[in-house]
Length: 131
Image (cartoon, rainbow, N blue to C red):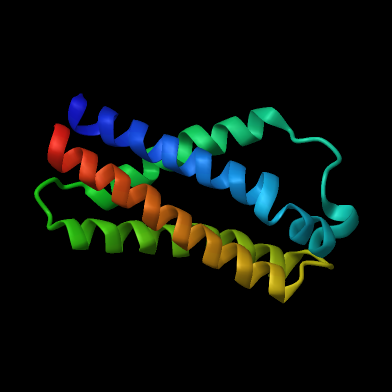
């Protein structure tokens, strides 16, 4: 249980803090500008909660398991999970939505890759030290 739970908590914490800073402060105006009227006035909390509790679980499961991999390999797998996860979202939006800017897709995918890498690195370090 601790093999998964402690790294999951680390990934959950890092991903939550990073995304709160990114979406709430650093890039808030960028997303509003790029998304325009497509952006909801208020956050829909249920889908947000499903993502923020589910994504770190998937990140840990895909990046850290099977256990015993070198730290660098686990971090690289976390980056890949972020690239694929956010890339699928942004490329799908780019393909299907009338006004989804390429700039937004590129920035959001890069952000997802970076945030996933950092959250995965935190999870991997916790897994190696505390499980």
